[in-house]
Length: 195
Image 1 (tube, one colour):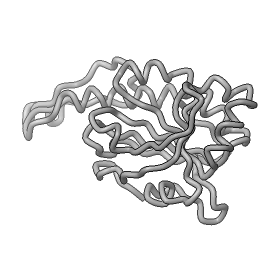
Image 2 (cartoon, helix red, strand yellow; image 1 turned 45 degrees about the horizontal axis):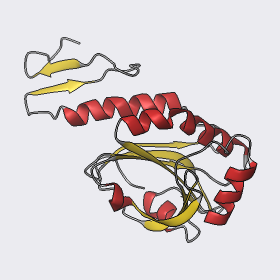
Image 3 (cartoon, one colour; image 1 turned 180 degrees about the horizontal axis):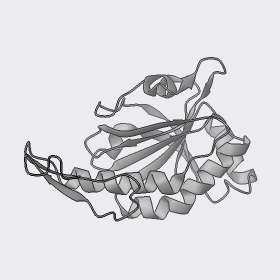
Image 4 (spheres, one colour; image 1 turned 90 degrees about the vertical axis):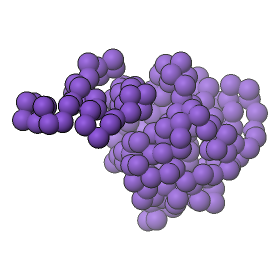
């Protein structure tokens, strides 16, 4: 399994691009300089997965406005992705790319392959513009993703990225903070014991 703070494993794969109704190659390194949100789902035409993609689509414009791309990844083919977008009432509005991982290399590299089923585990990875993993979550296959939480985590990680720490001063985002959270500015040693 990858870790927060580690380089995101690069990959090149086929993807279905619903916004253009086309199939083409996509590489993670193509997004250098942008945030990337990888949303892994066990399989097309399954029940919770459709709700995940629908929820990410509802936030897609917000992610894009903040220099982020959303990529959906599963062990399905681009052909399956295309038909799913065309036939599912929940998925038909999706505009972000759906990445093919038939050979399971992406799921394996990220630690999301369920070896018992051969399918991808449900989860999310947020990668910063430098290609470093900043957020990882893995879910029970029957539990849909909380996309508002994921978006808020992204916005707060983006703030922290744009305000790098020094050894004696840094900003933190406290628990239960949503979008546009007020951050706390920490000064060492003055802030020790003050929270």
